[in-house]
Image (cartoon, rainbow, N blue to C red; front, top):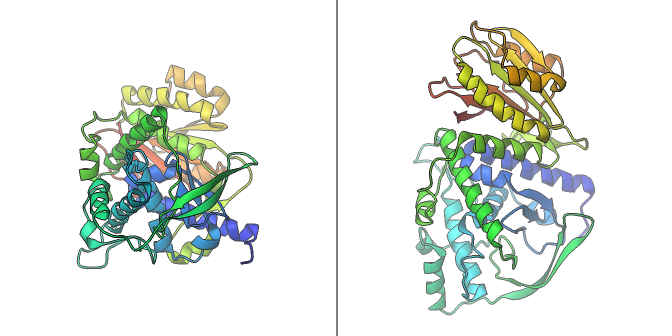
Length: 408
């Protein structure tokens, strides 16, 4: 097989990045978890994908490029499920081959149930399509991996594991070589023999809690595996502060891989996918817009100003726009700390966000992420801007035509 060119690998990376943004839009719970993972091409991987369940999803572009968009989405969702199920940590001495099969049966049934939000129930409303050869059986639907494993132990299996060498790109110029990894022939991925330490397990637990909060912050849109999370005791946790949701989300965008919706790839627009384009320079520009109309309280502004100060070290540049029905102040990074400390914001009139987004476009600010503090009783541009938009809103708020909403 002829090796792929760098441009072909980049094209496949862009396709995965597009699916990540689609998942975040349609299913905020699953999309948030996927956003925490770095997508890394690994041409020597003997399967579509593999994951360490904490920070990386490796994919073989020579194999994944043969999948259609829905099949590729299925593969990504499958890898995300390894985070939620903590599949390696739950093995507890069980036979590895059958346990790997059991977890795949459980995961694939779960991913097959992810639907297109708003699609009529009588239609084929499944968002993803299972690749050929993936482990699936209707009798294992709605069963946990432990129960499926016991069933597999009572039957004679027609397949047997094979040992494969796995070579993965590392975090630097080196590669990770994992010899003789057991391949359970699940049709999707290779299960890596990683064991998570206590800190990593706590990180995953906290990440899932934030993903649940992200689901609720987006008006309970999309799919949430409630029974699974409740059985793990995760839905009984106290409500996560909006500050943590905001910081997790912004940090993931500012410190993510080098793709930007400000440069969409036109090749995939026909597939109804907005594909982030690849760029080489690091642009971690943060634009914050404060609604200074009469409806916003000083307490609202003080609370968010405190959070903005905490974000400043993570962004290369920060611009603060203060506006009501017109631009009142534009504060550069050098003056930001002083203005936020004094809280002296001009305004008090009506609310209109058209002028804010016009200012961003006219001055070519090109933000990596936009954060708007507002009650959203406002006017908005008809066209969605080509960058992520987050709204921090009061309890009584309007509905924006686009963007993620986090309620204070």
